[in-house]
Length: 349
Image: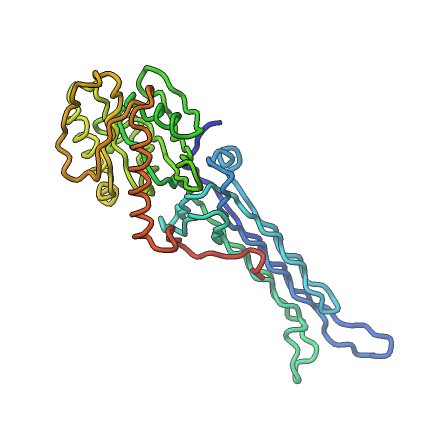
């Protein structure tokens, strides 16, 4: 399946139904009064988070979505039926923007979060609404209002506890395949990973956390070089960054500093997130040979591993878990702050 994390679509809420001008005809009432009913409201368009989805691919194939219009009013003061809503499922972590104004309408950060993106038109009033003591036979009625139309952009930002950041072939995919059930593509050439991968890591009991493997970052990634700019957004919501530096690199210190520079150039808040240094490919050094010591004043920890040989994996998982627990404690009971107004479509009249 192709990974699609940014799409543009057109949405249109339904127009309201028109009211009607009608007069009652009763056998024993020679002059029946006005009984024109109101039109029904148009359907709304909602966006809702679905934890079963991981991509916005469906919206590449269908880009226009329209809710149903309201039914016109009828005689005997019968109100027209309300238009059916359209509910658009998206992956958790999707940001919704109005392309016309550039405004962020909202974002869905938990499964079931729902945002109203286009309001249906109000139904028009029938002539029964215009009757007064001095105006007993009104012929006035109102047309239904137009529904809201918008051009929207959906942008997916993966939500994970740990974000793996490193150059191509740093061993990120191999590590993910070892610590979780994820099966990313692994090969000995650069840019093997062309899309982010998520894996759930178990600590051996009820404790689990999510790791995201982000495609390789190269120098100039924040300017759009390589795949970095396209996928750096996916580490914005991670709690902890793990900078992976292979020990067979010509200059591991320079690699680490370059990765830090690219993240900082992309986003200062992202740069400020807690991070650990993961020295990969430890098996390339003899067990009794000391590994290079890097200058990492801001890192919370350094762990040397060999994903291929299984060396240091348990220590790394424990380190990750300790940092995640610390960050969750700082977040408080509601660890995912929801931005944007949430709606319950079933409760919307």
